[in-house]
Image (cartoon, one colour):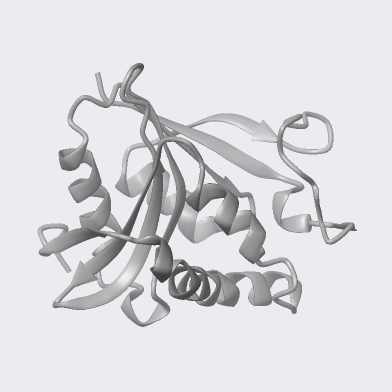
Length: 176
């Protein structure tokens, strides 16, 4: 489908957080189960709440054809205009329909003063890597792994190592 799909970004209110979290975990689950055989490495409710309640967080439902088709958490710095895509998901029933790219284009239009966008994704998520580089125009600027760790990233979930964040890429897209 075309990236000109009609996408609406509808703000998420705090009472909607439980549904937002559930939908995000359901969207992330297939790739994690495919890679690790279990969904125990899904982002936890607390990890997601940390993003939802962070300073500068702007949280949206992705609305397509009057249906919630996904969600996004953005960190918007209105002073520096160096923003980040913290969490982004499309419901699995909409995968392959062009909603991801259409949503990204909608986000770019909503924040025209952005100088740079940054995001991360695990190394095993080839579909996401393809999306960010080949569809959205991001570039890999750093690869975090056992030889080059990001000091602020937790590497355990419930005191167990988390292979989802052992190896991941940092992407950046320069807008100006």
